[in-house]
Amino acid sequence: MTRMGRQGGFSLLEVIAAIAVLAIAFSALMQVAGSSMSLTARANERTQAALRARSLLDGAFVMEPVREGSSEGRIDDVYRWRMNVSRYQSPGDRPAADGVSPAALLYRLDLDVMWGPEGSERHARFATLRMGNPNQDASP
Image 1 (cartoon, one colour):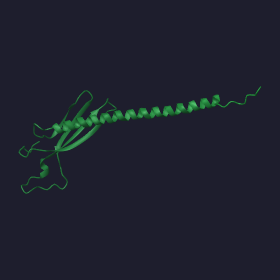
Image 2 (tube, rainbow, N blue to C red):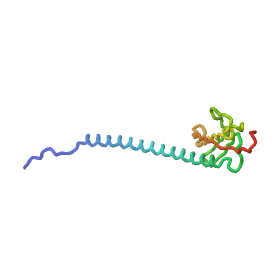
Image 3 (tube, rainbow, N blue to C red):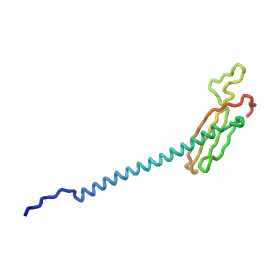
Image 4 (cartoon, rainbow, N blue to C red):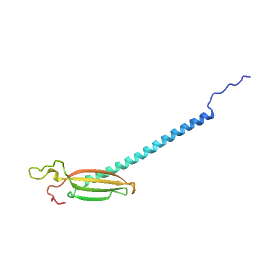
C-alpha cells in the first residue's frame, strides 16, 4: 500500500479569513454605492430646482412691467420660491448724455428656491438682471 501524503487545500482558518476579507470589502463597496445614490438624488434635486428657477426667471415680468418688491409662492408640492426685485446699482454708474443712467433701467431679480422638510430645508439661489421699460414711471 502506498502511503497517502498530505493533500493540498485550504484549512478552515484560511477559508474563514478569506470570507471575512470579502465581507469587509463588500460592506465598503455597498457603503460607497449608497453614498453615490444619495449624491445622485441630491444632484437631481438641485437640477430640478435650477430648471424651475430658470422657468420662473424667464417668465417673470414678460407680460407686465418690472416692479420692485418681494413675492413668493409654490411651484409644486416639493419646491417653494421667494423673489426679490430691486434696482440694479452698477459700480461706477455714470449718467448718460440725457441724464438717465443706463443702469437705471436694470433690475436685479434674486430668486431663492427651497425644498425639503422644515429644519433640514435645502435651497438654491439664482440671480439675473432684467431690463425695465424706459416709459415706465420711476416710482416703485
